[in-house]
Length: 114
Image (cartoon, rainbow, N blue to C red; front, side, top):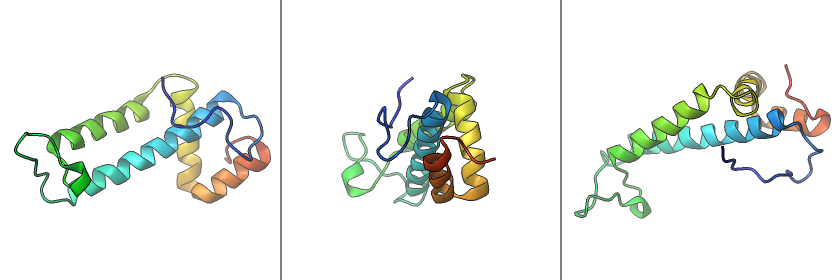
């Protein structure tokens, strides 16, 4: 499994794998949600004459939305203890306390707030 986060987050103590990878998966999931939302509000998913999307112009294809939905579902349904359970614990914390408070708690304690 790949991760969007560096192996040691600057300013954070050494974290357990489930906390480090979990919060990275939460951030990836949040980013995907913003991308999917921007696709939904774009110009109806128009594409260029080549069939490829014109992402530089902010126009995205239906394929890109499906791809984003697929990756979002993969994060949500991952059954691994590190990535899947880490994501669910981190996502629950972010939903309950917000991203900033969750990150502050991780920085201070090395764990997710519960």
